[in-house]
Length: 205
Figure 1 (spheres, rainbow, N blue to C red):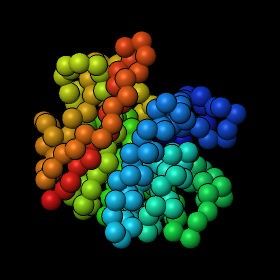
Figure 2: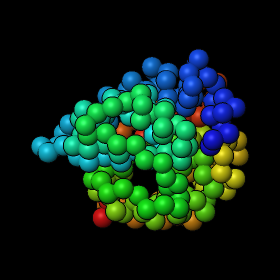
Figure 3: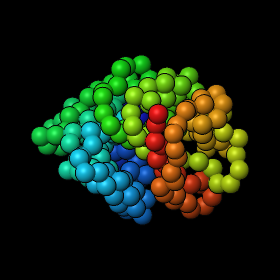
């Protein structure tokens, strides 16, 4: 991922770090920010939230005031250092971690927005083995339109399974994530048959 940012594979938008149009297009991110904000503010006591793959933090910054503590995680050390300088709040902390390898921070809720789609099945398995440490998982994935064969393996990197006409379904083989309840939060259909961005809420055991 260091190379993705250094080589501007997701574009630049004249920014030092840029997580791509999917983290900046208003028609994509505004409904997402609204629905996640509604979830976070539905609790009497604010939640501790861990954002796995926080990127340039153009989205996560909106959630910080709605939480007790917000822990933003990314694997790119220069990006984390940049975010630490740019975004400051008493309840905000940035951590440089490899979510497939390292222990993850304790929290009530974890946000994983268009992150697992870039990982191999082996790394996805490593991540989801840790998800039962949380009460809630807000998962967003880029999926093909219509029916598709899920969970075709890829090499971790900038690409996603959409090129193989596939996408992640954590509830099926080879992952079999165990959840208590699933709630569909949001779908956004991309133009030119480029797929659909789906956000779900998992209530964990």
